[in-house]
Length: 77
Image (cartoon, rainbow, N blue to C red; front, side, top):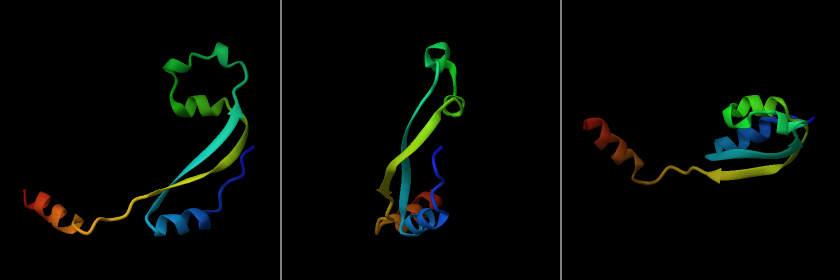
């Protein structure tokens, strides 16, 4: 089973304006018997076993210098 990430690691990246994507691999027994095209992501993941965390992808989400004025302009409409 995949070990949970430390909330401290997630909080640290988030506080620096990063968004994290966890990448894992596992197996879905009898996947051929599942109607995956009509299942939600959560339903499919519920069938996964032996998940192994491969790593994290950190995506930047920095606030641009002109964001404040753009938001003000949109609010003023």
